[in-house]
Image 1: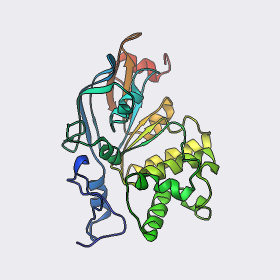
Image 2: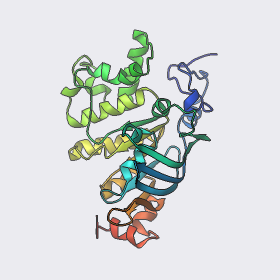
Image 3: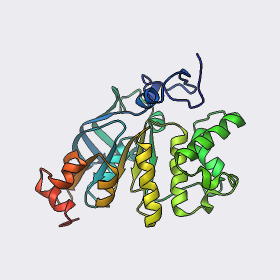
Length: 295
């Protein structure tokens, strides 16, 4: 089988069965590669627990491929908890569990045979605060996920992955002459783009972003928002944000979460196109939230 320089995972591969060295034919078009990479996610009747506490109740939604879906709502309504359930990151907390289904291209991500580590390779995560590994160079930060997955790389392959990932995060031109310098020495906005480069280096299908701009200045925020618009060509993106203007700018679909009451679970109130949510929502609570009357 012929190979091309930008390796993609096969469309039919499920997270539990992901081969380490998947390749694609050299004559595959960019459009076909993008279509094969991004994933659609269907969530059905999802309940999320921490021990006996029901944190988020009965969420059902479709997350479309090659689009940005924004999750909005007041603090404590379960947005980040739901986001972390999409790649099983919430499981790092003892006692956390889900009931219901999260299906990505026909594969239940919580099926007994599915390896959560493989899920996280396909569904990457960018956190609220930039978290480059402080003792690693920019170069090694980008490759950290590959090393964690025990990928053995030649120097030429590693160089290609670093350049591709940094270009994908719009950071290459700013750091290409100092790849051996610590990642923690970059500015806040650059650090966040470095974390995005690290996430896309392992070539996931989906990118989850948990308030990725909340710790950044307006100029860095604009750079990240521009990057999100570019990345949606290759990835399915889900972003949690408290910034209503940001949700309106970057997303095509918006889901509004709210609390049922004090001490009660969060729930999905309404999901629709971003234009509809911000101009003519169906639910009165959604309208009150996006207009700033609460939250």
